[in-house]
Amino acid sequence: MLAPPSEYAIYFVVDTNILLHHFEVLAQFVEDVERLSLPVIVIVPGAVIYELDGQKNRDGLAWFARRASAWLLKKVKERKSIRGQANEETCKSTRNWKIREPGEVGSLIPEMFNDNLILDCCMYFSRGRQTLLCSADNNLCISSHAQDIRTISPSRHWSSKEISYQIYGGRVDLSQFGPYTASYRNPPDASSVDDDGRMDIDDDDGLMTAEVLEPSHALDLLHLQVIDHFTRLLVELVGRVGDEAVHRPTTVEDEANLSRHAPRWRHYKDWSAAECLEYLNRRRPVRARNPRAEVFLCRPYSRGGARRGQDWARKDWEVALGSLKETSIGWKDVSLQESLTVLEPHLQMIFGMRLRPTGV
Image 1 (cartoon, rainbow, N blue to C red):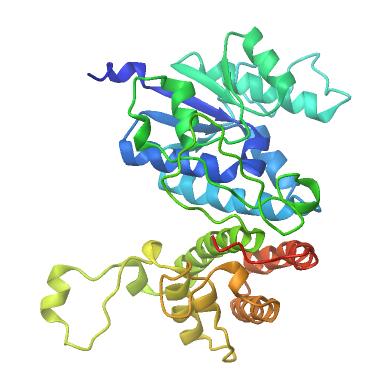
Image 2 (image 1 turned 30 degrees about the horizontal axis):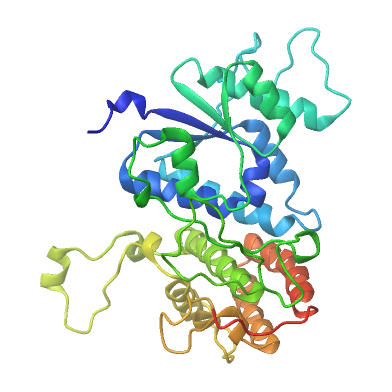
């Protein structure tokens, strides 16, 4: 029997390092929470948003920061389980977390000052319901515990399932939450990638399962990130430049009045990257290339020609992303262009490694 809903209601405050280095795990947890209709609200402190913005052009972190920022924007707009900290949501006497209190001075170490702002956010929300801080920063976790705020820190094989266990123990069906999956990180800085471009994956974690055979090749993992991120940006672009038809899906009533060959529409927010590109390039054509970006940005084997990241030659990556760049230039979309720019160093690093197919 389930416990009363109040025992499930929590605020889940996330630190910058979670969004940068454990993005897939957090995204899966949010997806699971929304699917199960659990009363969990993920809070993004204002200081975290500022820190994330500051990483958008930093070598090694820009790609990850832009992915996280685009995802946050989408989720905040949905008004479901993620929200940002409002200026007045603070314990400060100034009633605005951005305004320093009388006598308050900035720390000589900016990270410590930001930690204090994140802790202030946790303390504010802990007034209303159970609040947890999710962070990989040991010092911030120590400060949080000193204020009686529970913390959750990522493990080597962290997963949505593990987060739910850390929050609820055995009070929820853990099989409803996603297991551990590998994700792409910076090869030069991550011991989790070997010389063959494969992620170093162990299976000794008690909460891990072998329910799904996941890719472990660096190109496969990066390709999945590329698909997800650019799909998000393309959907945003269609929403900005699209005509009335893309905002109003075809209804049952419309069907009765449409001719057999008239186009039918789903709401643009449900479109794939291929659908977005076909719509955008029909209005502002780009040069025909092979492979087409529409196929390259499809999940492996989801349509004819779609394949894994390692199955595309380097030239294929360059041609498909070059086509996407033409689309971004045609529509003057800065987000797409900047994301393509910060992606390039990762491709150079991976293709500079000794790679071999994994068969997974």
